Length: 376
Image (cartoon, rainbow, N blue to C red; front, side, top):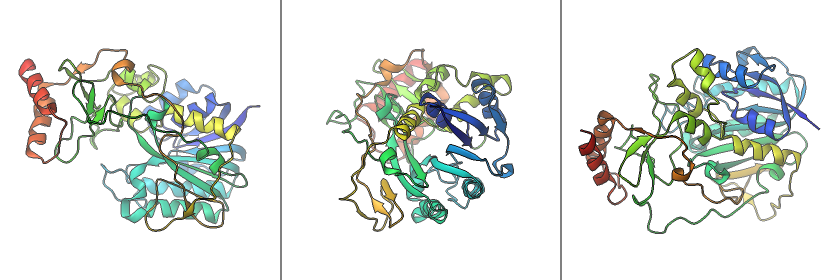
């Protein structure tokens, strides 16, 4: 039986596509960004598109409400204004709509940094809002790599419901993360990193890329770079970037009809990894029993996973790896030739890296030096 859903802050449909693959039908999608709306209109034909969440009133009786509310104020690389920032405070619109609607299940997604920013203010506001509305809730930090994409992407997934058990959806699956080489990151394999950083962070990832992100505040895209075993340094093709978020190749291509092609990186950076939301949708349809007898009340900081059934807030000890999958390596995943990193970008990264105090993998900076000499 097909179940119904509505997506707020839908972006390019990461949550919604995953749920569609699990048997949920979108009744309406709300997104204010023109490029993202254009992708939605092409990929979800016939679905009602709403413009501004602040103009949405009650949405009637539906099974699931999704909301990947804006993360710019919560991100570790943003302004860090917190949940009270002008964009992230839009989550209050979710509470307003829920108070006027008949919605059993709610799924939210946002950045992991929200657990720690301003002493966890965002999480407290989030769970308090749902508790006031009578919802039970659970949340969990999940790494997208568990779902077959070579992108180290930790995000908070939050599930709330009126009468069911959100733990049976979000916390009942757990697996052991595959072991990585004990010697650490090696340049003998592929190494992903942020070429736009280098002084205080670089996002180093072995056989993967660090998380795709929206880019700079002035709209300059910043796809991660990859140091290949042969010494080449390049950025993934945008078609592979679509796939790195679990979309079909060229999912974001329609955006080029109304904006510059580079905007596709921003759309993907703001999106949700599709296989994760598909797993959530399948668990919604077939929940598994969760045994929380050993869980203890939360003390101090917000943990990486937690829950409440209406009688207190408890810490769960679930990992960020819900299902058992082999690690997919970026070198095996890419289907298109990478674009060589420019001389300006390469030398800029090296300059910042050598001035900073970061510890890089053995031979990493030397390999970049050789790449620069080759292309200079």
